[in-house]
View (cartoon, one colour):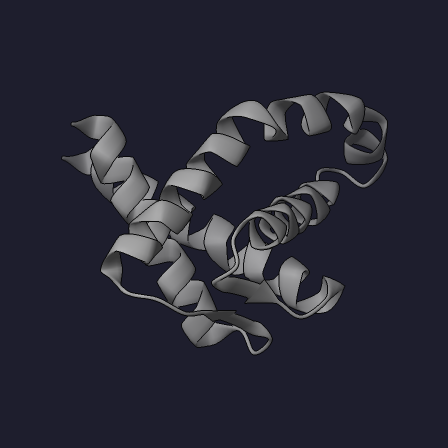
Length: 114
């Protein structure tokens, strides 16, 4: 059940990100949004830890700001895997990574209080 909620929240995060960041668009219905949330979740589960491990020197030198670049790269990867999600370059990906990270942080803070 928790996994389904996480997938739905990832999809909602993509919806919010597409609404706030120009250059990020998604097309499709609610099921495609859930599929997008599933893909984002799988990327964060399988790919992001490996990329983060390889990026530790950059993360240390930039005092953690490089995590924003990693989040943007994961968003670009998701858009390359999904035909209905488009990210128009590196700047929208970086901004989208920031918005998606903030959304997940806020939702995680609200969920922790429950």
